Length: 195
Image (cartoon, rainbow, N blue to C red; front, side, top):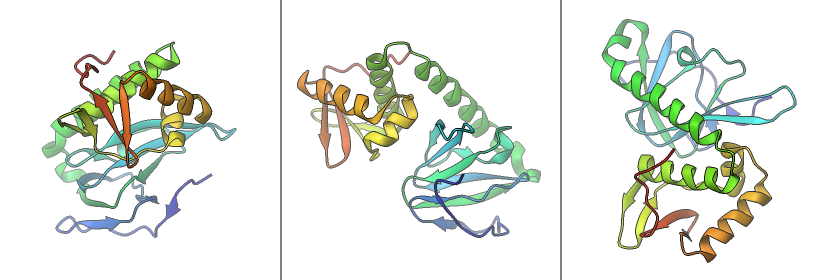
């Protein structure tokens, strides 16, 4: 089962970047890590019955690729237009810091996704997104990444309807504002504590 548009595998030229449009899948190769030069991707797998399992969200400077996962299936989906450059095995040692950051973020998300309370899981996920993709504005923290209710529900493992209801409640409680598909965590939201 492939959820995103597959592009033909291309032999990477490490001296150039490759462009992938939104919703496309980045090719998987056992001998290449991809460094994100522009844009945002998510990595995921799914159960035999089709349940999507989000593994992470990655931005400029992060590395992704098949060598970082033993999961099959495994996919890297572009959430925006993305530019990547190939890191073949002979230069992986130059990317150890990015690999460590990758592992740390997987652990952070794992802790968030195991939170028992669905409301608290959603709040922690939004705070994590604010730390990773957000910047401070007058009202609070703007998460500079557009995610649909469906994408959030896939990430935190609940129904889209539950996400819609909880986001509406957070808006009514003046903790969150939606602005053109992006979220603002209001000043009262403490983003320094995630798990």
